[in-house]
Structures are given as structure tokens and as C-alpha cells.
Image (cartoon, rainbow, N blue to C red; front, side, top):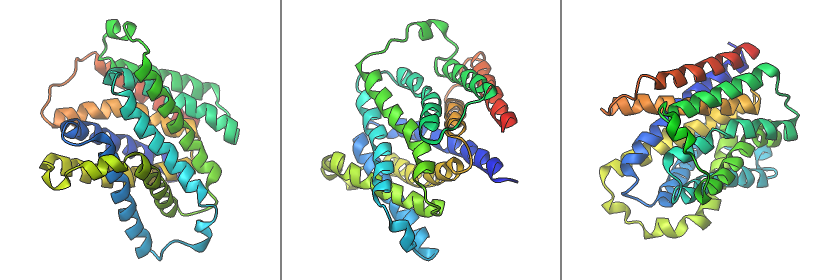
Length: 292
């Protein structure tokens, strides 16, 4: 199996793991300040990856050069999370999810600007089909809901966060100097934790961590290990072997994975028509695989 194929598998696993954080996060959302949760997951994930790096021999001296790269990358991801929660104060979750479908397209644009990654006609068609499929799933096959979609202040705030997310992916390849993905992941997490210490520090200090219910700790554990540490590594690896547009295209599978997670938690299955959107996202990804 080549590196490109491993990159696709990494992002397939990424989309499934990220989806789990949505389902668990909804159960813990009212029990802890979102910024405190984000700060905790960055700090704990950095500690986990740091332990793995130390076990493997530590951080090479060469990886410490130009440490500003890690602050920039981690800061971009921190900006994404902060603006996501800020936008969700007024933007409905469905509207925010619709805005998020723009990330792969924006990432393709940044990929061309920073790396001169060219989008072929098949890639463009696949990205368009994938966006349509993701929107179909997000709006539950309800055309009236899609037509009623309006862009407000919250959606615009979240769009800026999504732009930071889209820029993050090609910058990984641009700024990587041959560092091991695990070491590069550690640097990014530490950079993000430093930025979040300023933004989310007060919320973290004000949180009564001892009194938090069990579901919050389950969510923190899952998001730390699976939805932060592992997914950061998966994105770092995939970005070094795939164009940015292909990497981010897998985010369109997240709504479909969320459906499976929700069914696993005992919630009702969505309307059958929603499966049409799932099929479109699969077709789009097959198109990207064929182009590869």
C-alpha cells in the first residue's frame, strides 16, 4: 500500500473519529464551558503525544528550529474552535454545518496559493458532488430548510474560523521541514495550547473540575485521545501525501458518520431520503480516489 492510499485511509478514520466528538459533545455541552473543554483537550492531548515522543527518544534538536511554525499552526486551529463557539451563540448548528462544507473548497484555493496544487476537472466535479451530498445530509433531505438558509452574524463569524481551518491544512505541508508527523503534531498541539491559554484560561480557572459529571470526563477523554491527539496526527500524515483539497474533502463524511453514532446511542434513524446524500459523498470520494 502506497503513502497516498495510507493518506486516504487516515482521513477516512479521521472523519469517523471527529464525528464521535459531535455526539458526545452534545451530551456534555451544557455541563462545561466550551472554551474550558477545548483548552483541556489541547493540554491533555499535548501531554499524551509528548509522552509518546519522549518514549521514542524525544524531540530532535532540528525540530526545535523555527518554533513559530507550531504557534502559527496551533493558533489557526485554536482560532477555528474559538470562532466556532462564538458563531454558535447565534448561528443554528445546521447553518454552521452548512458553512463548514466550504472548508474543502477554500482549502483547495489555499493549496493553489501556497503550494501551486492544481485542481483537475475530476477533482472539481468530485468536490462539487461531495458538497452537495454533505448539504443533503445536513439539511435532512429537506429542500425547504435548505432554501430557508440565511447568513447571519454567527454564520459570518464561523466562516472566518472555517477559513483558518482551511488554511491550516496546506500550511502543514508548507512549513514541515521533514519532521516526523508525531513530533510535528506535538509542536502544533503545544502551540495551540499556548494560544488557548490566553483565550480560554479564565474559563478553565473558573471551572469546578471536581464537580463535573461523568459524561463530561468521558467526553474529555474521547476528545483528548481520539478527536484531538490521533486526528491531529492523521491530518499531519495525510497532508504530507495528499493535496489539501483531498484531505479536507473527507470532512464531508462527518455528517454521515454522525448519523451512525447517533443510531449507536439509541436515537432514531434519519429519513431514508438522507441516504441519497450519503451516496453522493461516497461517489465524490471515489472520484478523488480514481483521480489519484
